[in-house]
Image 1 (cartoon, helix red, strand yellow):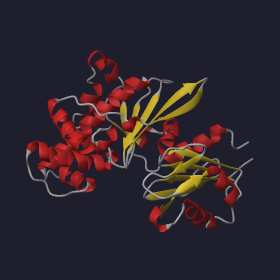
Image 2: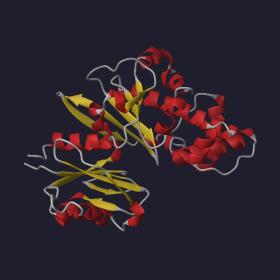
Image 3: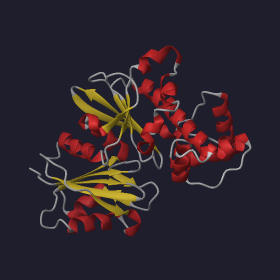
Image 4: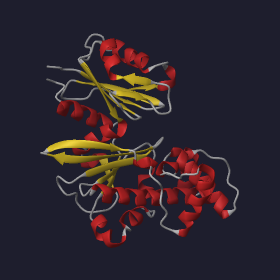
Length: 319
């Protein structure tokens, strides 16, 4: 019986690690990706600190597509290969999960205190659940129950074509189309996407806007010091609501829609004051259907570790 398991959430900028003994998850260690030439070096540094009680298996959430238990991390040079890591560190098993797959697995384990509610009614027990979120990119995963067992499905919805719900949104998308050609959801609903919106709105409105990154735009919007930033953040929230509503219909996500990622939890209160929920529900004949679906922001730090642990428990790797 495996007693200790290494869990990790590895992104393009930061990597977080923790050990679980099968009951609780230990302290989470934060590393900067840039400080290590490879994933192996980072993992070795973590395991060296736990040499007295080494783990026997690992489940690693990774910010990129996983194929054949291998992943090249988006926005970094790290390559992770589960088979190679198993041999390198003498582990019984290594599983790689897409980062939103890990978040999908976390959904049944989240508590009310882990969530910030943004409209809707009570979730339907046993119905599909959806987690999505803008960060470096735009991730999406759905959780379904099959024979009373959870099944998580990861999608590439972030690369689907973004649609407009107003003339103003159409003008912004047209401006972005001149820049990018295809305008995907991720071109707007991501950190760089907020910057794209900001610059596109300035051009559409014919106003000058100082250079700002996503954090600067968010700050200037929240304190009201920049009208273009306010407009960009409000449109960002509206687009997020429209996309979330479309995906909720696609997945029949009556179990609830959960917003994750590194951006939205920073302005949870503001989201309730925007057109997010109106655009989430505004689907014509299905307004009432979507009106019943609850939307929540995941505000618990490191929620993916709940999912990584649950995946390991469900995968049978402990046998």
